[in-house]
Length: 142
Image (cartoon, rainbow, N blue to C red; front, top):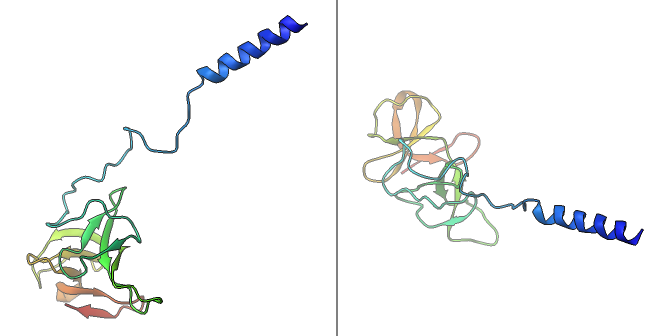
């Protein structure tokens, strides 16, 4: 009886040791490396994280998150306590470098001017420097 108990315990221990360990971190087979995309712009930050702090709020404001999502460094008004840095926020689909006033593909799109200013598609007005400041569609020109 004791021998059978020891054998069963040994088999159970061997099975536990042979099982692969599960980890929460992505390995080398992570499906989307935050690399270069066809619509990336000069000055792009490739280690941005959604809601993480940033300081490039005026020029070259775009970045990519861990999964390749397009992010923009924006200052959030009326914060308390006051914070004097920006935060990475989700942005419209990035369309690369565009000229101011040029026609744009769709009304909800973002791009960068050759001088580094962020651009927003304003429909018939084409690409305009600036960004939306609230959910009700107020546009803040740069």
